[in-house]
Figure 1 (cartoon, rainbow, N blue to C red):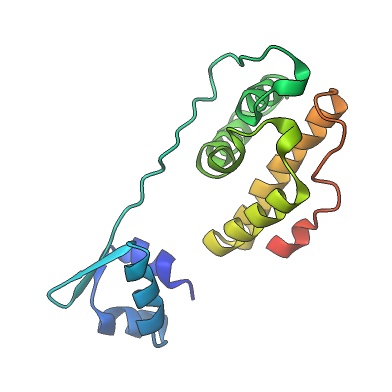
Figure 2: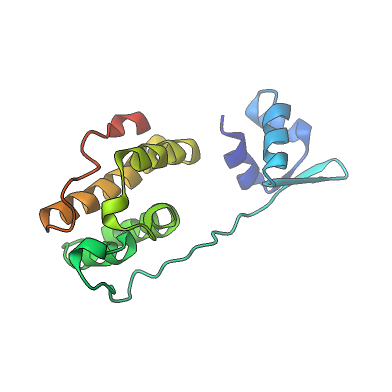
Length: 169
């Protein structure tokens, strides 16, 4: 069981409460979360501390770039969204994945700087944070954007090739 997700859901809890729900010894995991400043502990009560993303990205702005070789991922993601025919719900899901997962990791990188290793690291982060389907969706969207960048001539090699998204499942 993912203790961090459970803690986030509960907001406040005692050690006995979380161990009863998780049906497991949670002390080690709670200590890790305390050390990472994701939990606080006062008067026998654990409290989950909401983490704020330090980077925020707007997807509705026009991309700013001078040539195809020096375009940031965040700018190209706007091009991608504007050139795909997507349903309202799909667009909403894509924007959410971009805002909360992909852009904080890749937004300020030039397209040509993204490597297969970056993608594999990102995939493992998503796998730890989300259910397999959500993690897989994020990695697949990243791959689709990079494939489109390759097809449009923005990059010479698609770093997503060779990434096995099955690791998320």
